[in-house]
Length: 433
Ligand code: 9WN
Image (cartoon, rainbow, N blue to C red; front, side):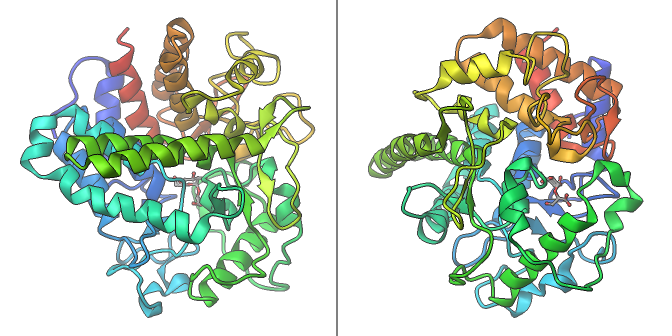
């Protein structure tokens, strides 16, 4: 990888990504997250494409190499020899005993589908190198199989994809999961290992009660061989950010198919993106003025304003974009008002709001990147630039924190976090100072 040149941000971000590189992929953070995570790798590749397009390709290819026979891309691909550092690890999942699992140990769950979009952005960073290596030719069938898995095994009557665990949303303890999770019975008396608390303060992580339920759900999924046929599975939700990212990734597959001369497939991807966009409207909550999650077990929309509900701003032709922009700029998310840093993960005025606890208030860099990108694409260049510059500034001053106190910008969670470094680099390239 070329050395980081130029600004302190570029140099330091390059260093973080080098520290966390493990030869074929990047771990999110050396201590807290010592394995490869699915949507992290896609975000990381979006940044490393500016340093080494080839390494960004490898980041995605190593994840695709852990694809299961049914097409799923696993939430975590485990690094050999690090079973004690993260729970649940490879000895919990024992994926090798599940028919059709990956050739390497992985978790059985999934994460949000941002991969095809990332693959397209990586290709665009250096199309000649990408064509020379046949990057898209090799990636496309696997990415298409991933989306086919989501359609075949994770799509219900609404036409939207559902997730079976808070971890699958990538926004683990969002208030959106409070009610669906309350209905899940934790394993009574079971030990809840928390190696994460060696690396981050307990007040900045999900609670023990949440972890008890997370593990109970994961164990039930595992014990059913992760085969998605467990009809009474107690947690099944549709999430607006997951759906919005799938729209973007279907549109990216359309572009990739065009690049590969697969014109029939291109139309299929565009049709699917259009159908998903229409289905997303079933998550619109008129009274709250935002998209929300649907609990498929109770059938109820979950009445919480969160950053997940703002992510559909990335969807072209979205019906309620103006209302969402109003929400983003209002007192609940505070964009441009000077009272919040980046975009808080949840409504600043809600009863559930918490300045430290993970996805219940703190500001994250991946969602800032998604919203900055949406603003830019919607022609709101000044707001996009202001958000991008704030993200770059806070990335450096927080030593690439995992997330920030949403009022003060103080670092929270772990430090030298890979996607913070990668996405700050990408924002710096898109909005040079
Ligand atoms: C569970 C790795 C992951 C991110 C998620 C974030 C956090 C894991 C955890 O870290 O989740 O997947 O242990 O809390 O919520 O978005 O992918 O960075």
